[in-house]
Length: 91
Image (cartoon, rainbow, N blue to C red; front, side):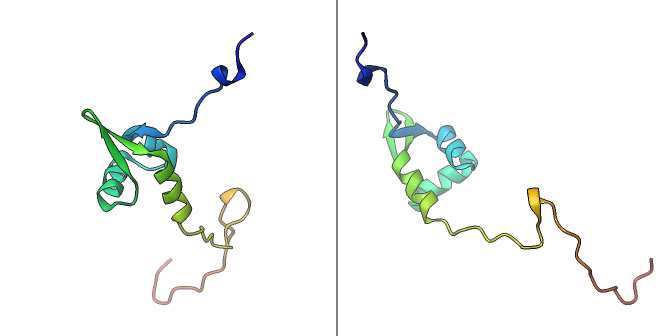
């Protein structure tokens, strides 16, 4: 019987740049820029730059809450709103 601890998968503590980008839904250019600004932490392992996963969590937790326009209804569809007629515009 295998030991349960041996079969567990470990959460990564460092990830490659493309993986970091996928984890937060951004592109690799953003990751390099965030590293340069000190918003996330990176380390070198040989020639590779790796990102500390904990710093991605800190970055995500520091972002402001989204404010969604109440004119958007269910499933993200925009409800029709009345707009005033534009003066001097031909139909």
